[in-house]
Length: 112
Image (cartoon, rainbow, N blue to C red; front, side):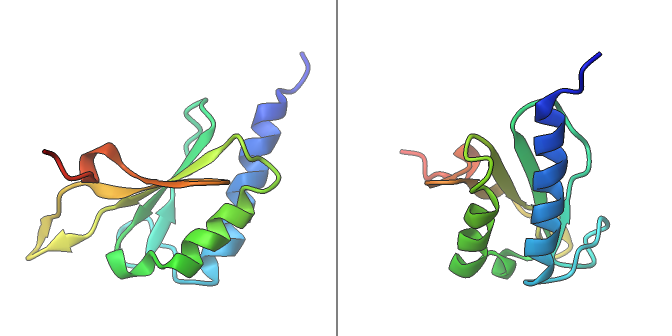
C-alpha cells in the first residue's frame, strides 16, 4: 500500500507550526502555556491550535502561520481560543487562518 501524500503534508505542517509558534510563546497541552497544537489527525486538511491566552494571537503570529501554509496552501489552521475568564471557560472564539485569508470562527461572529 502506497503512503498517502496527505499524511506527509499533515506531518510537515505539524512540524512547521511547532517551529513557528514556539517563536511566539510556550506550548502546553494543559493550558499552562500559550498554545497547544492538537496532535490528532482527523483526516481533513486542517490543524487545530488551542490558544490559552487571547493576547497570544497577534497580526505577526497570524502572518507567520500564513507563511507556514505556503507549501500547502489548500490547508488551514484553526486557532481556537480556550481562555478562561474568572476560572470558567470563555465562549468559543477564534480564527481560521488560510494561506490567503483569515476568517473568524462562525461562533465568534457577531449575530444580527
